[in-house]
Length: 419
Image (cartoon, rainbow, N blue to C red):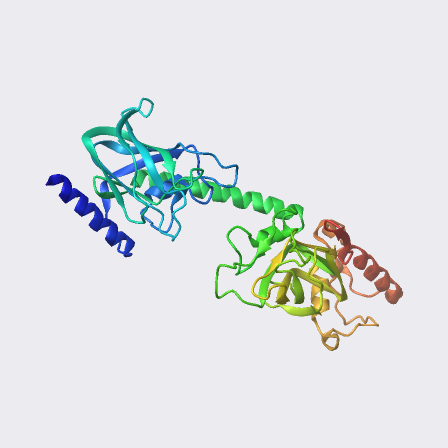
């Protein structure tokens, strides 16, 4: 009678979980979980995360291996274990469903003994509970998966012990969060270094697939590329991606390299056909620099020579029409330009009629003009406040000074990024 009650309770719990209700975690928790086989997007820890939308799965992308597959759980203490519950994946696909499994236990995580051999579990999405013939006390629980639905795959959504959902311990969660934060910081540093090598400071898009990030459009890696999130039903044109350059440049041309793979007809999914090029010096106000139409959606890189050079720190691409219409992709953006100055940018943006008139004659009453020079030449500037009267050759001297200033202050350093 005791066994029947536990089974009924386990089935009730499974029904509640699959109905979408939140389950309370058990007093038992897991300090660590390891496996000999996991997909990078379907980690072993997902079998104890309390989230039935994520699950553990073996790695099918790096050569299929046949069972056995092993999952080992370190509990946060030593507990008596009387039953084990296995919840299959809940995504309408039972690939990797566990059929035959050995329940192994250990006190030290090295020497394991088999507590129960399970011959055959049902083909079902429901929680399956295994009642141990003889309850055991252990700190380590191991699932040795002998046979699965597809032989070369294994999967598990959530683990239950004694009828209760098992999750990571608070200490394990804190350690995992700290490790994740450190890994993210290292990743961001690596991204910044990679982008800097290719002439960028940042690349962002509000629409990107988690495996095809915007930064891949400027990382110099031909195997990685940006792609909008095709799994999002709200994703639609226009698609926007913004590149922050590593300096202020006067850009004369840009090159778009499409993703490296094509369809059978030679077309490239997401390739830009009609798009707009915008410029900005502050990342907030963008100005249309040029519209491009009718670009072929094939594997060839496309170079656009701008009708008018743009002095900019940001390049924004707005894809209005792409191959496939409902998504966009881009392997690399390259640009050719020369380093500009803030003065050059201001002159580019200011209307001609708003420029101050040029003084042609100097008088004794007129203050000496203040001449902007680069910081590194400040030590060489003669204090102008001591000049009380313009020399007789004021016109020629002023022209010489302006020529020198123009040479130092407005010189453009040629730069070509991955040309």
